[in-house]
Image 1: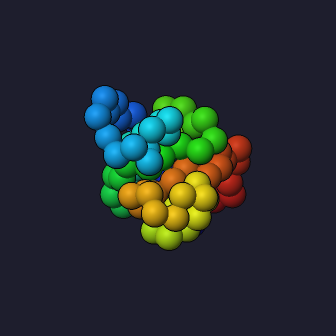
Image 2: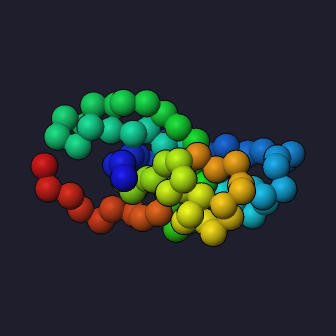
Length: 87
Protein backbone atom coordinates (compact mmCIF):
# COMPACT_ATOMS: atom_id res chain seq x y z
CA UNK A 1 0.00 0.00 0.00
CA UNK A 2 1.02 3.57 -0.62
CA UNK A 3 0.11 6.91 0.94
CA UNK A 4 -0.99 9.57 -1.50
CA UNK A 5 -2.74 12.89 -1.76
CA UNK A 6 -5.56 13.46 -4.24
CA UNK A 7 -4.58 16.43 -6.40
CA UNK A 8 -7.16 16.28 -9.18
CA UNK A 9 -9.45 14.18 -11.30
CA UNK A 10 -9.55 12.90 -14.87
CA UNK A 11 -12.62 13.17 -17.08
CA UNK A 12 -12.79 10.59 -19.85
CA UNK A 13 -15.88 10.39 -22.03
CA UNK A 14 -14.59 7.32 -23.91
CA UNK A 15 -12.87 4.54 -22.00
CA UNK A 16 -12.68 0.78 -21.62
CA UNK A 17 -16.12 -0.60 -20.70
CA UNK A 18 -14.74 -2.20 -17.49
CA UNK A 19 -13.94 1.32 -16.20
CA UNK A 20 -17.49 2.63 -16.60
CA UNK A 21 -18.84 3.97 -13.33
CA UNK A 22 -15.44 4.54 -11.72
CA UNK A 23 -14.20 8.01 -10.83
CA UNK A 24 -10.59 8.53 -11.97
CA UNK A 25 -8.40 10.59 -9.63
CA UNK A 26 -4.88 11.99 -9.92
CA UNK A 27 -2.95 10.92 -6.83
CA UNK A 28 0.44 12.23 -5.80
CA UNK A 29 2.26 9.39 -4.01
CA UNK A 30 4.31 10.71 -1.09
CA UNK A 31 7.09 9.64 1.24
CA UNK A 32 5.43 9.54 4.67
CA UNK A 33 8.22 11.02 6.82
CA UNK A 34 9.22 13.87 4.52
CA UNK A 35 6.00 14.18 2.48
CA UNK A 36 8.32 14.27 -0.54
CA UNK A 37 6.44 13.77 -3.80
CA UNK A 38 7.36 10.46 -5.43
CA UNK A 39 5.19 10.40 -8.56
CA UNK A 40 1.72 11.18 -9.84
CA UNK A 41 -0.58 8.36 -10.92
CA UNK A 42 -4.17 7.93 -12.02
CA UNK A 43 -6.21 5.66 -9.73
CA UNK A 44 -9.82 4.59 -9.66
CA UNK A 45 -11.63 5.81 -6.57
CA UNK A 46 -13.48 3.11 -4.63
CA UNK A 47 -14.24 5.17 -1.51
CA UNK A 48 -15.37 8.65 -2.59
CA UNK A 49 -12.15 10.56 -1.94
CA UNK A 50 -11.90 14.26 -2.73
CA UNK A 51 -9.21 16.71 -3.75
CA UNK A 52 -6.73 17.43 -0.94
CA UNK A 53 -7.43 14.23 1.01
CA UNK A 54 -4.72 11.79 1.99
CA UNK A 55 -5.56 8.29 0.78
CA UNK A 56 -4.40 4.67 0.79
CA UNK A 57 -3.58 3.35 -2.67
CA UNK A 58 -2.91 -0.18 -3.92
CA UNK A 59 -1.34 -0.99 -7.27
CA UNK A 60 -1.14 -3.89 -9.68
CA UNK A 61 -3.09 -7.07 -9.04
CA UNK A 62 -4.20 -5.78 -5.61
CA UNK A 63 -6.03 -2.92 -7.34
CA UNK A 64 -7.87 -5.33 -9.63
CA UNK A 65 -8.74 -7.60 -6.70
CA UNK A 66 -10.25 -4.63 -4.84
CA UNK A 67 -12.74 -4.19 -7.70
CA UNK A 68 -13.47 -7.90 -8.16
CA UNK A 69 -12.85 -7.34 -11.89
CA UNK A 70 -9.77 -9.46 -12.41
CA UNK A 71 -9.58 -8.80 -16.16
CA UNK A 72 -10.08 -5.01 -15.98
CA UNK A 73 -7.23 -2.70 -17.06
CA UNK A 74 -6.78 -1.24 -13.56
CA UNK A 75 -3.29 -0.54 -12.21
CA UNK A 76 -4.10 1.59 -9.14
CA UNK A 77 -7.07 1.99 -6.79
CA UNK A 78 -7.87 4.26 -3.85
CA UNK A 79 -9.09 1.94 -1.10
CA UNK A 80 -9.16 4.21 1.95
CA UNK A 81 -9.24 7.81 3.14
CA UNK A 82 -6.69 8.61 5.85
CA UNK A 83 -8.04 10.55 8.82
CA UNK A 84 -4.65 10.95 10.55
CA UNK A 85 -1.17 9.48 10.45
CA UNK A 86 1.75 9.92 12.82
CA UNK A 87 4.88 11.49 11.49
